[in-house]
Image (cartoon, rainbow, N blue to C red; front, side, top):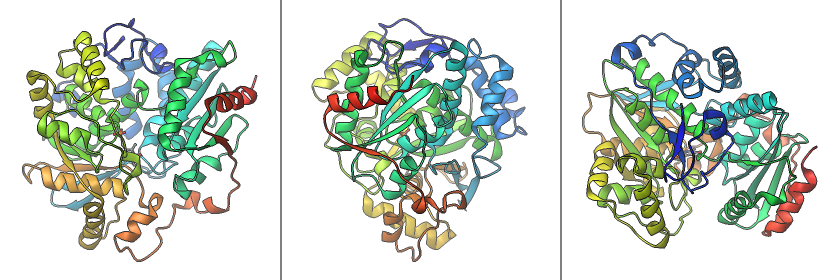
Length: 465
Ligand SMILES: *Cc1c(COP(=O)(O)O)cnc(C)c1O
């Protein structure tokens, strides 16, 4: 399988190359040139597979030219060993045909573990095979950084530098990053905000001469195709558990950068019967505004109770636009450069396609908290604020009660104690036992000013030979 850029100006890559790249040189994102598709009979034949067996079926065609089947099997088995629940992605019922799929059973209690545990193993495998070393540089407002560190902590060939805004991530989130100790793991607390961190990462990717000659930067944010690929699996797993593919199911997805729900869209394109895909956003609702009124416009960032969905633009949405514009890279190039200058409208046929594929709903902090209380009252089930947004949007958007509606529960409530407290939950939410001592563990991080030269100097001084 080859991967092509959404802007049509970059050479096609194979899986191994795409794994080691961030953005395409033309500024686009890589997508598979073609998708494998499956009949209902084929999908039905997977009904009894375990999560890891199913992951192998789904992922194998995407990587076949780069990774032999036996090696891929080992990578996948290893990817999910640190997940606490034997089902990996268990379903919990909230009401009649209303479900949540818990994607927070991984080591850092958020769904990003699904992709980043696999990314770490994939990178280690290809780097070891090629005797190469790389540098991971990423910015985080919380969940991505800890999942990336956990996913890559055992990698021999990766130095990892994660920037977070000093004093602006929750204590649980910070400790999940800073208590993973290793000579190749570096947490940098920047005296600035998340956008400052992200801007320095972006600028560093654009000018990598500061690195030693034999190194390059690798992206761990969801522009990396391998992350999307790993997330397709659980859509199939949920459907098969609830009577699919002979019956359609719907999904509601707490959405920020559009990586997670884009994987659901791909599952549908691959043949999985999905009736509705609901984009659930917080007050940062660029996608809801687009789907409801065909205006793609940036609003200032708002800080909400669901910080992992606080975005101004959703980077992966370009991958969907590419399909809505019939894979016309030139049109996407023009659209994105217009969007850099101001608000844009999609062309009518593209907008109709997007609107036929997705429902959307925006949930503010008050409704988020009310939903946490509601679900606790009715089902005695505690949602985190991101998952609560998913449940609320699902309830507002579902067209019938005969199709199972599955909300992706993207984080564990112990990660966001403030929102849970505001919802009137009377106790402390205990951390799962594997991290019960998180607040006693030794932390290690370096505070640096918002100064890219200083950050790069620090990196060069700490890259291991
Ligand atoms: C990252 C994240 C999201 C948003 O996922 P996207 O793929 O960026 O849309 C939602 N919830 C939680 C808890 C997250 O960490």
